[in-house]
Length: 175
Image (cartoon, rainbow, N blue to C red):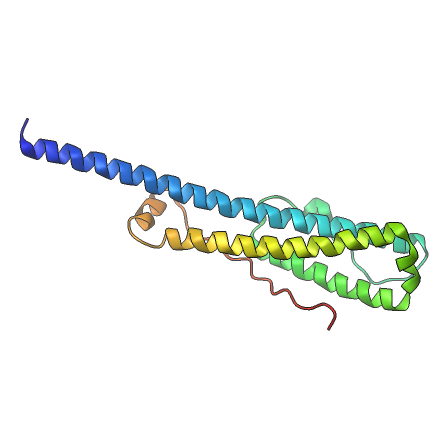
């Protein structure tokens, strides 16, 4: 065997090792980003579900309200970050309406079921905020990993492209 053949074999083995390593890294970072996205989905679902329970209690007490309940059956794992941000905004609009209603009907806070669901509703917003930060961090890591060479070439082979960030700005709802 000639020296050139040995060097070619070593080069091809090294190329295969780099290809496998980078592929595994890209796939693991993408999976991490998807996992964080599903945490956002779960927080959105929980928030909408708790809102539906709150509205149910309000309706049972005969209180007029303008709070819209989002249909949690339309939620699903794997929603795009744009759709997640849209649902977050819709839920925050309903949150503001709920806060306005609570200013007028403070007796709702005397109901233990209502207080429990309200705490869970607010807790789900905090979880959504934490999940969005974790998602954006992992997505930035994924996007930056596929932007350089040789990752960009390997990502193109596997038809991987950059992922969108969760773009909803969490504002202070007490304003």
